[in-house]
Amino acid sequence: MLISAVIPVFNEELTIGNVIRRLALVMQKLGFKYEIIVVDDCSADRSLQFSKISGVKVFSLKMHMGKGYALMAGFAKAKGEIITTIDSDGSHLPEELPRLLIPVLQNKSDLVIGSRYLGQTPVAAKKLNIAGVRLFNFLVKILTGIGVSDSQSGYRVMKSTVLKSMSLKSGGYEIESEMLVKTTRHGFSVVEVPISFEQRTYGTSRLDPMLDGIKILLSILLAYIRSGRE
Image 1 (cartoon, rainbow, N blue to C red):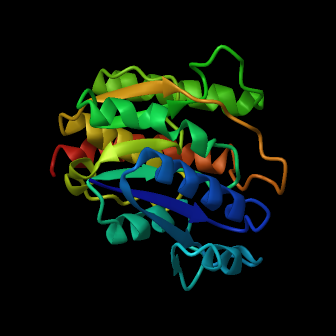
Image 2 (cartoon, one colour):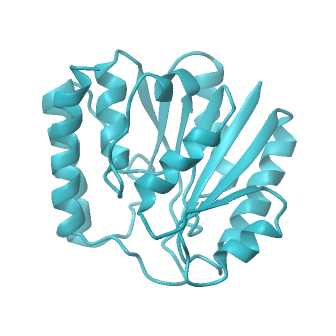
């Protein structure tokens, strides 16, 4: 079995090398064949250089397109039967990957989401962000009947058949919502597992709560409509 890990990167020179090294070590300990695919979203810093010296597969977008485009580019290159995505800012712990893999390996789920809100320790986040996530979760449940606590998490593991079943359109952060809605609409199973979440210690988040929030809401509605036609 081959596991493909896709990491979208934009201006994360201080963390990307560490994320890659730790993820590779976890993969080696698991004993599966694996590939790590880094997609650099035209970073203005040294993210691309640090990714290349890590010895993994690295692809670079010719212009800054957004997280969704970077993920889709990585998915197009991924050859694994199982696909995992993880953020490049160090907020997700590569060491917790086995926790997300187990339900898929045991054929108990087609998509596993690492939830920041299932753990016992509350996640420190801006009230506006938390309110937004709750709104997105509620809308997903209304449309699909699936209740999740963290519809926007970027730490995921899925079977390749899930990705092959859908045509993704979202170019930004809203891709997580689109994937979730289309996964459930196509009859695949979804479960969440608790993960740790470390607020970034370097750089600043590029998520705009208002603008990206509107995009996410629209993506949920459009994904619901479009998935009925796929």
